[in-house]
Amino acid sequence: MIELRHPYATVDYGGSRSVGGNQMRAQKKIMRQAGCGVVAAADLTLYLGAHRAGCGALARSALPLPFPEYETYLETLRRRYLPLIPRFGLNGLMLVWGLNRIFMKNRVPLRAGWGVRSGKLWPTVTHMLASDLPVILSVGPNLPRFWRRRKLTFYRKTETGELVPAAFVRAHYVTVTGLDDTHLRIASWGGEYFISRDEFTRYAARDSTRIFSNIVRLKPKRRLFG
Image: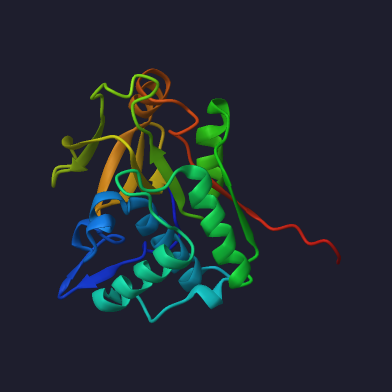
């Protein structure tokens, strides 16, 4: 499996530690309903601040981040950079726009962009993970038939290593922390899940659209001089 080089950002919820943040434990209703993109952005920046050269301005206190401090950070990002549309949250362009403003504010030598062509999806995910960059992945809504109720399966790994269905999702952001030939390992709702690569590809093509079911790509910012 190709994976991040360091443990993913963790939050201390009063003694229990999560894998990334959990939007369902946020105090604001709008965050619980539509805040997955803000959580994904927060966890990405926390990881970069802790582990990537040139991103130290993003660092908070040592991980795991205490929940009150994490909650304050979420609210800062939501109010300043990632405003949520009630019931709809963030689209991909809004998410990368907010991330790029965060990067510019903190002089982070990265630039975010939205989406890649279908044939480049897995190679791009592989390249980013190999470069120790978490990958924000969008499981898009049902489009163009928005009235449908098709969802993508999230799996959990049992103690014996078997993957069993654990959740069924659409219109949701997660963070990819690892990838092998068949599955993505992801962080969502403060836990670790797995997505079938084949099932995601079919969902994006048949039940959603690749415009929305895609990734945030991160690249080093080019220097104009020197």
